Image 1 (cartoon, rainbow, N blue to C red):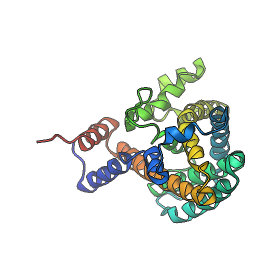
Image 2: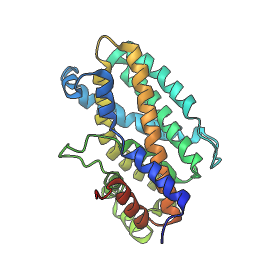
Image 3: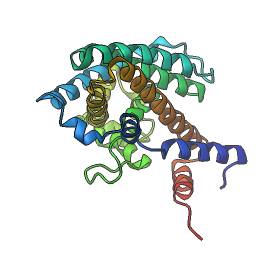
Length: 277
C-alpha cells in the first residue's frame, strides 16, 4: 500500500517540522551563549523547583486548555493569536525574573497547550476524546535534549514510546484494560477516575522531559541584559516551536489513522534518513 500524493507531501512537511533544530539549539542561537554555561548561573535548587512547577503547570493546563475551545474539528488554527498571548506572558515573566516563574509558567503552558489543541482540532481531531488530550500532552515531550545526549533519544517515534512507558506505572486493572484494547484506543474505555490516574502518570513522564527545556529557558531569561524583551521573545519562540511540533505530530497521527502506524513509521524513517547515492 502506498500513500496518496497529497498525503505524501503532508508527511514530508511533518518530517521537516519534527526534525528541525531542537528548542535548546534555537535558544543558544538567540542568546549567543551556551545553555550549559547559563544553567550554572541559576540559584541553588532551582532545577528541582522548576521541575515541580512544570508538573503542576501541565496538570493545570491539561484541565483548562482543551476545554476552552469549541469542539469543531477542521477549524483553522489561530496560531498568531496564541503567539501574541504567549509573548505577553513571557514579557511579564522576563521582567520579574526567576521569582515570577511559578506565576508565569502555568499561564504560558496553558496558552501553549491551547495552541497545540487548536492545531489538533484543525487536523480533524475531536477534542472531547481523551486520546486527543493524550496526543496534545505528548507534544511537550518532543524537542527535548539533543541527540548527542546519551540519556535521551529524541527520535520522534522513540519519544512517543513515553506514553507506553507511562502505562507501566498503572495499576493491574488498567494494565488489563490496556491488554484487552488496541494500544492507541484503550483510553476510550476508562472511567473518569481511571482516566485521571492514567493522565497523571502521563503528565509525570512528560514533565520530566519538558522540565529540562523549561529550566534552560529560565537560565536564558536570567541573562541580565535581556529581561522582559527576552521573556517575550523566548515565549514566542517556544510557542512557535511547539506549534510546529504539534502540526507535525497531528499530521502523523492523522495519516496513521488513514493508513497504519507501521506504514507511516516506515515512510517517516525513509524520508528522514534518505539514502545517499
